[in-house]
Amino acid sequence: MNIDRAVERLAFIKSVYNIGNEQSRRTEPFCWTSILIFHDAIELFLALASEYLDIDKRLRDIRFMKYWPLLSEILRKKGKGELTQKISMEKLNKARVDFKHYGNPSSKSAIDDFRASVTSFFEENTPAIFDAQFSDISLIQLVKCETAKNSLKEAQNILNDGKIEESLDKVALAFAQLIDDYESRKRDRFGRSPFFFGASMTFLDSFGIGAQGDLGRFIDRTKESIEAIQEAVKLLSLGLDYRRFTRFRLLAPIVIRTIGGKYIIQRIQRGSKGTPKPEDAQFCIDFVVESAVEIQEFDYSLERVD
Image 1 (cartoon, rainbow, N blue to C red):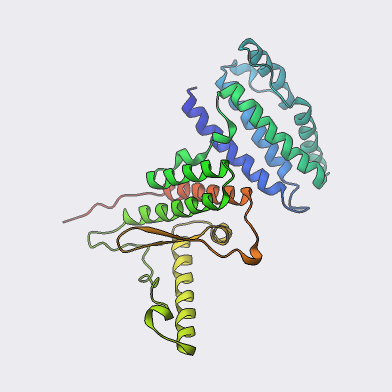
Image 2: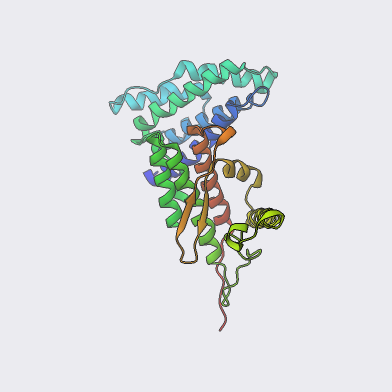
């Protein structure tokens, strides 16, 4: 197996891990399923590692904990130590069996510990096996829109440097570029888009029109309502997850595109919403990547008839 194919599968494994990570931070009982998700992510990694290291296919159909001596032997021969986190993963495996087969969930504190140990497993073993940092693995490489892909890469790099607001700026820009790119390639020969649900009302507010009092408030509220409906209908027509989008919208800034094609980023007032955390920014990045993959799943070109 070549490294490009391996990295592509690693990106999927990381997406599974991210789902488990997000689920594990929820309250009980919703955090319980993270045990199953974490275990699946680890098992997918172990199976990929055995394939990547060219282990005999007859030895790949093995039980979870049997991977440790098998993979460690190969790593020692390569001078890369052993597969780590054996004891922690043995505990995870037992917790998974207890929950899945006997209905005994782990406590919230135990799940927090599992999240930490699973994270350490990936961070320690990905470089040893694949010569890549786990933090660098991302589904971003699957995004076909180059402008959106580049913005997402910047967002991820900035987030890795701890700059959350700046990362959210870039991920909001990536989402706008993704939608605009897809819509622009679906226009007919008259320039009409199948995802057009009314003209932009960006500058049609009370200030721009010069209206005051009750009329001004009516204009502003009508504008907000129409824009919200336009946005919702477009997102649903593209087949995107609107509920996840609502969280994205609460976190990411607003992006406006001028007539000349320039993007303007307007940060939202946090107020009582609080300061976003690194996992919030990571959620936004993952949402845009997932949206891109969803859109690409049903992509098509229009043949223009002159």
